[in-house]
Length: 196
Image (cartoon, rainbow, N blue to C red; front, top):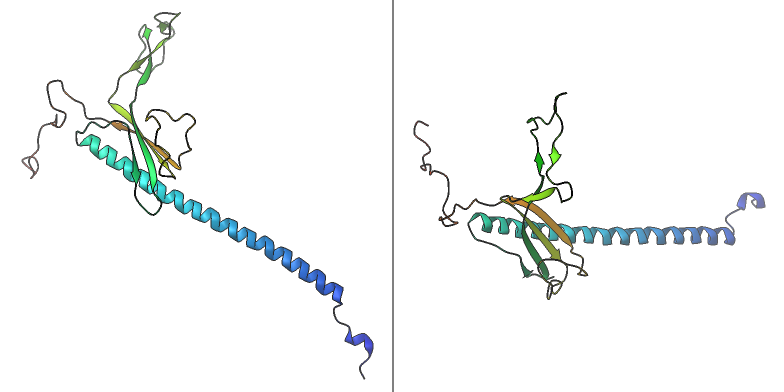
C-alpha cells in the first residue's frame, strides 16, 4: 500500500476556483475579440467610404477642368448599402491687409523706415481678394436619405458625415468674350515642338 501523504491531489475547492478564473479570463478575451472585429468592420466601412468620396471628388475636379460649370449638388451612390453624398463648391477668397507705405519684398524694415499703417483705423482692415481657387467639399453619409431636404450650403443640425474631404482647386481662367471650353495657351503639335 502506498502511504497517504504521496497520494495528495487537488481539492474540489481548488478546481472550482481555477475553473472560475479560466471562465472569467475567457469572457474578457471573447469581448476583446468582438470589440476588435467591430472596430475592424467600422474601419473597413470608412476606408470604402473614403475611396468613394475620393472618386466623387476626382469626378468633380475632372468636370470642372473640362469646362463644365459645376455648382453644389447631392446624390446617392448605389450599392448593397446606398450612401448619399453632398458636393459643395464655393469660391475661395484670400483676406489681405490694406496698407499704405512701402514695405520691401522681404518684409524687413530698415532702421530709418516705419511699418505700414492701416488706411482707416476704424474700419475692418481686411478685404477679400478674388482668386481662381475654389473649395470643393465632399460629404458622404451612411444612409440614403441623410441629405434629403437639406440645403446644399450648410448643415446645421444635420447628420454627421461618415467621410468629409475638402480640396482647393484652381479653376481655368476665363477670358472675357471667350467660351470656357477654349484653351488660353498656344497649341503644341502632337509630335512636340520642332527640334526635339
